[in-house]
Image (cartoon, rainbow, N blue to C red; front, side, top):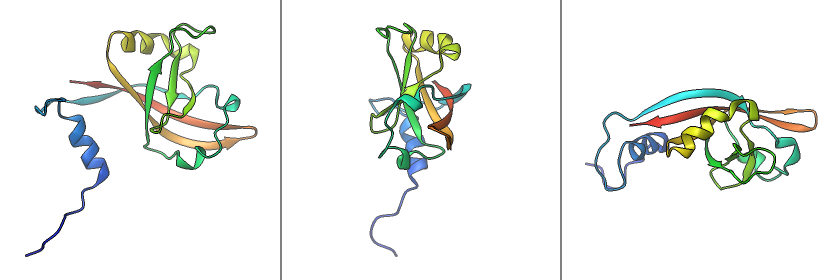
Length: 132
């Protein structure tokens, strides 16, 4: 008989947490629906030193609406899990996503690839809707 703690895979733990409501009740039909594939716009204008090495395929990226953005009232900020602002959902792809966020839907990004391209860091993401 073993004693002590059993290690739990962090990905499994995240999946389990996503299947429960804040009060602990189970949501048996939680689905992640992929909506858009895109790059993160504006990374060339941001200082990502110190953040770059934390970015890896599969990482979750919180999205946040920025309705007061002077350049685009439908702007959606893309951040890393520590809250660093990486860039934006490109304007050509943000309208439907902004409307979903404004309606209270849970959207998030997941890193697909990260690569240097001359003077900027290209981060390709997939944006998902968590549906229950």
